[in-house]
Amino acid sequence: MLNIVLHEPEMPANTGNIGRTCVATDTVLHLIEPLGFKINDKMLKRAGLDYWDKLDVRIYDDFDDFLAKNPGAKIYMATTKAARSYTDVQYEDDCYIMFGKESAGIPESILQKYQDTAVRIPMWGDIRSLNLSNSVAIVLYEALRQNNFLGLKMKGRPRTFDWD
Image 1 (cartoon, rainbow, N blue to C red):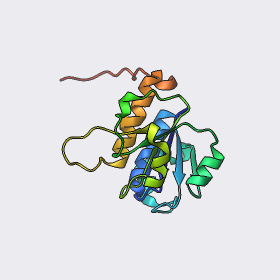
Image 2 (cartoon, helix red, strand yellow; image 1 turned 30 degrees about the vertical axis):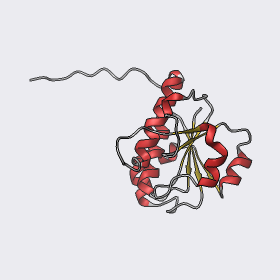
Image 3 (cartoon, rainbow, N blue to C red; image 1 turned 45 degrees about the horizontal axis):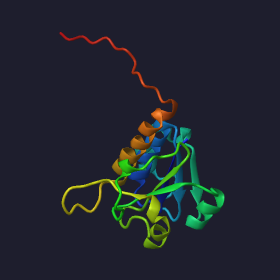
Image 4 (cartoon, rainbow, N blue to C red; image 1 turned 180 degrees about the vertical axis):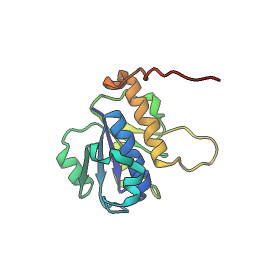
């Protein structure tokens, strides 16, 4: 099972949307405090729709608490400061993919320790970054693709369309 880690997320709508994506992909969501919102924020629940109660979400006091509770975790750091593309690594089916807060990303003090597993989403020009929930979806679905979608449904429901 894959894991998404949000380091100090600030916007409840992004976290709610990411939570919904995690439910749809059977992915665990890890939140590292401080959060820029309360976990019962209505914007968080609104973006997560009625899926929030189905989400496996774990909350940590800080990054050290996260490391202590997930010993030996293989962590990929998604950052605009990485040289390697997110498609250039092989994601293990139990790895953790970490994203930083919307305004500042992952702190340099953490990134320095994880340079070998830092990845980026290529972008054109001087664009600083993509929306956090979009970035999570892009990288998460690449990790899922590499792992044959880890038991997710691959066929949709047949529908009858009235073309008249």
